Image 1 (cartoon, rainbow, N blue to C red):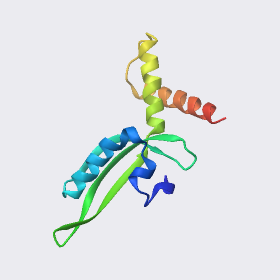
Image 2: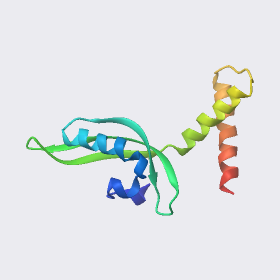
Image 3: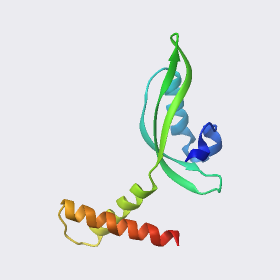
Length: 117
């Protein structure tokens, strides 16, 4: 994610995600905080990555002089959510306990590492 530091949002955000991203930037320009929202950014290699962002205006002497945005890659979370949906669709009855959540994390980790190969 370090590769996107300081880049213009329009260069890293696919066109269909501009409305939401720009709305959040305008909100910050007005001095209001940017609540967490999901979007997608494009890496240098062209791959699209799901992200979650939030931010705030940087204010000096009562004027907005910049915007700080924190963005994190949520690819693994999205994979885990999909694995959980698949599990529910399969009709398997499970109970949300620490053991089943650990099992889900292990299955997701194995799934994501097999994709990397």
